[in-house]
Image (cartoon, one colour):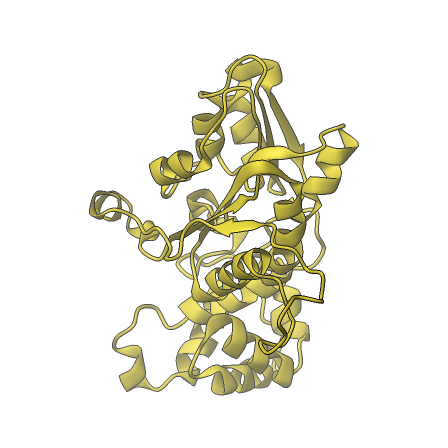
Length: 312
C-alpha cells in the first residue's frame, strides 16, 4: 500500500517556522515527508533538513519523496526522543526549527494489518516501530484489571473504562484475545446500548488509550520537549501539532514552563531559584485548521498547532 498522509496545518506550520534559507531544521515525525518537503524547498544549498521516524514504511516513503533534494536531507530511523542525541552525534550543535506532527498517519490507520483501526478485523498490533516486541496484544492480555482501567480512563478519557477493563479480563480467561474485532465485541458489550447510540464508534477511546500506552507516546513527548527547546538556536522555533487534549496539555505546560520557569514564592521581591526563561510562547491560543482544510480532511478536526520561540 502506498504511504499516504495528509500534512495537517501545513501552511500554518511553515509560516510559523520563519524558515531561514541557510538554516538547519528537524522534522521529528517525518511520516510521508509532507512537512519536510515544504521546509527543504525553501532551503538554499547550504540549508539542511534532518528527518526522523520510527516507522519503516514512513522512512521508505519519505526517502523516495525527498530523494531529489540530495545531501540537503538526512533521514534517520529512530524515535524523536533520541533526535537531539542523534544530531549531536552527527556534529550538529543546534537547529533553527523543529516540527513535530504527533498524529498517527493515514497510512497507519488505513493499513489493516497494522492494527491501529477498529474498522478492520486483524491482529492486535498498534506498534509504530515494528522492531519492538511489545504490542497491543501484550497490553490487552497481560495488564491487570487495575492497569487496564487506569490506562483506558487516563489515556482514552473513556467514561466506561472500569467496565471495559472488567470485561476484557473476564473474556481473556476463556482464551487469549488476538484480534481487533474480538476486542470490539468486548468493548461493545461493556458499554450500555443507549450510550452507544451517539458519540462515534464505541472502541474509539479504548483504542486511543492502548495505542498511546503501546508506543509510550505521552512519556516520549513529556521527556523530549525541554531538550528540544534547549537545542534550538537563538530565535529558532518549535512547532508542534497535537490531536488530543492529553498531548496538547503537555505541550502547553512545557511551553509555559520554559517561558516562565521561576518557582520562587510570589512574595519574594527577587528571583532566587536561578531558573531563566528560554524564550516565549508565540501562540497564546493554538492555531486551528481552516474551514477549507476541515472540509478536505475530516481527520484534521482535532488538530492544534502550538509554537515556541527560543530567546535571542
